Amino acid sequence: MTNLILMLQHLFTKLLNLPKLNAIFDKIEFRYIPKHGSWLNMAEIEFSVLGRECLDRRIPDQATLKTEITAWKTRRNNLSRTVDWQFTTIDARIKLKRLYPSIIY
Image (cartoon, rainbow, N blue to C red; front, side, top):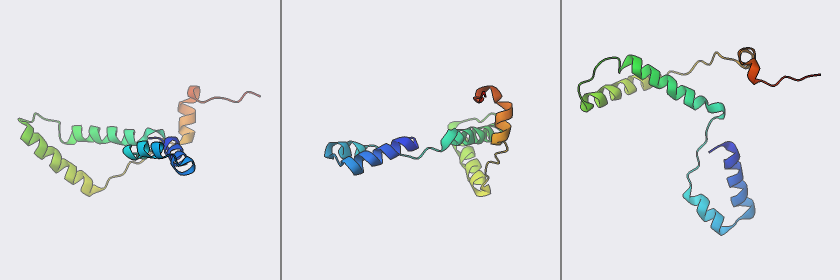
């Protein structure tokens, strides 16, 4: 769910206090989604690393695959790697100029 939907859910349940609406919202599990899909970029990066570090060879069976991925995941989590975002807003405005609106005077 986006932040807007979370805000609307809060407004509807707290301000209007409609029992039927509250019952519907109680059945829905709302989760925070980071702005601009950066979580998706991080997931893609992790899958890429998994492919290069763990799945770069033939694995004979599913049990071995699970063992290999579990060991890789444990090592990866212990490293506590973070994403170094080097693509700044200024760089984006230069590289993606055609996507940004320009102000005409």
